[in-house]
Length: 145
Image 1 (cartoon, rainbow, N blue to C red):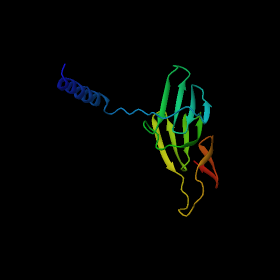
Image 2: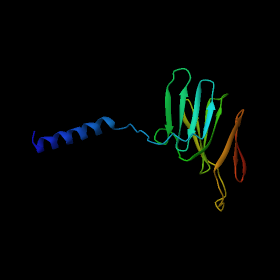
Image 3: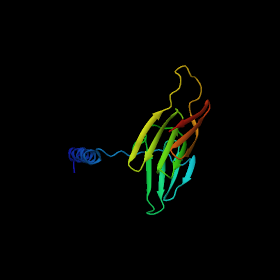
């Protein structure tokens, strides 16, 4: 086989790969350093800095959740799970958070702080009770209803 034919085959393989890979994103984030683990009734939720992964106790399936799939941020600082409403709260170092439900991301909220604020906006902890989520941050407590 001459060099020209090898070149044509190589270009053909690249084109075929691009056609079949359109619309599918995969993340290659490190999930090695687990920050938090939540043991829910039917799944285990683990957070790493760049994403979450869940383990289904029923099916044994593992799902990665990151900015490449549904999250709106990176640098996860805290997570919480509300069993009553089947909602997962994901807090970021930027002060924003996502609310994940079985149907996907319901909200992406940036906690409003005065524009002159120069301190740390990271969400340190999240606690859920009933219909409220309580966020502890360096500057105080924020309640999301």
